[in-house]
Amino acid sequence: MTRHAGLARLDQRFFEAVHTADPFNATMLGVNGFDDLVPDPSQAGAAAAASRIGAIEAEAREIDSDELDADDRIDRQVLLSLAGAARADLEHGSWATNASADGYGSPQGEAFMAVPTASLSDATAVEGYLRRLGALGGFFDAVGDRYRGAAAEGRRPTLVGVRQAQEQLAGHLAGPADVFQRPALPADVDADRVRARIAETVRDVVHPAMRRLATVLNDELAPVARTDDEVGLGAVPEGTPAYLAAVRRHTTTDLTPEQVHTVGHEVLADLREQWLELGGQVLGTTDVPSTLARLRDDPALRFGSAGEIVTVVTEALQRAEAVRDKWFPQYDISDCTVEEIDPVEGGNAALAHYRPPSADGSRPGAHCVLTVDPGERFTYEYEALAFHESTPGHHLQIASAQTLTQLPAYRRFLDAEVCAYVEGWGLYSERLADEMGLYSAPVQRLGMLSFDALRACRLVVDTGMHHLGWSRQQAIDFMWANTATTRHNVVNEINRYIAWPGQALAYMIGRREIVRLRSVATKRLGADFDVRGFHGAVLSHGAVPLRVLDDVVSTWVDDRSAPHR
Image (cartoon, rainbow, N blue to C red; front, side, top):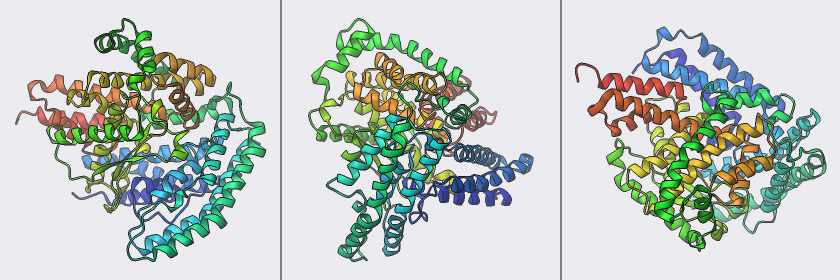
């Protein structure tokens, strides 16, 4: 395939620009070449990065799509969407308004999540890791300066986010194990010497900067922070346009917050009959409130140990892998492992997240699962969670995208950048697992319904807080009334949406579009519809905006329904 030369150059410039601006995300995505860098979180740094990306966006817009073949037209659409979203995100800088501990919504949270996952394959990589650690002191100081500057402009953080960030820093400072000592070392280095250098850098540079950031949070931000009655972006200057941009970025649609809010209520209404039917079959309940109460309160539906959680998600992954090739084209992808989330992060963490494999094959994909306080975790939720995070969900989709070497590098390594596709696929996978016969018992299918309700609630509460002015408690109460999850998890979920506006919308909006496209393909192709081929088509171009996915699937349907078939 011959690429359009100008577009190919823009692709490479974009790859360099976005990963230089956020090298922590590059590390999480398994992208090589950026593991020695830290971001520049200053206003000037964000403006410079936005300018670089904006220039790429403008040049891509000038390319005449009529000059491109079908694959390059798709690539241009993807580049324009991602560049525009990245530029807007840097320009709005909403994270500076929402100090928190979230691993995706705050720079220091991202540092704790990303830096220890670096793949240190040789002595050069080790030296790069040590340079990065040495730069973390200035990074944490710059984060504090950016928070301070935003507050001075009236873009004050939320008190709940400030408290989370304080607890996170205190936990890492007091923890028995240093998170930055976690990476495995290669055989060609003096391990004792390297470990000592890491310890020295953390003691003399990193920890003092973390303490300075904690002081900024405590002395300067907490006294002026927004209360729980004004947690949404709409409560701060320029917050409304920032939220509208976040909705566009995370859904890759033109849906308004009001439309998204309505969709959430509609999905919850549609789920009611399923709750009644399955709850009656499994639990003998006769209405939705009693089903939710039984799921929450029955001690038999709680885990007894962290090991039980690991066993459940590991066995779910193994069942999915055993039948994968019946439902998908064959992919030569990295293994997926199961890792427990660091207990220091456990108090504010979601139930799980996925970490992609590294490009060089030295790090497998990982389903990172929350196992702290197992007695507070529901046994029926973790199989659906496993199918979402591992196979057939994020691991299959993200790891297979890395193998699409015909695509530009920036498209082979994507996650939250195309959230509606990625999280829509993850949520689609929870229902697909039911088709595949992967749930081990009927009660586990109730977990599938519980997570559907959770994702529908996200549409309501995220738009409620950030666009309609809901309080934090109003959002908590709504989610508690409409899901079966624990009070603790509800609170964590709401805190996450406060810290990362708009991201919560991606799951259900993306899943609904994939389901719609499958329905259209089924109707058009009739007996010629092949679910394995449909999944291959959806995955064939990596993560793409939903508008582009429509074009991809439509082309696949047209090809299969052509007269020569």
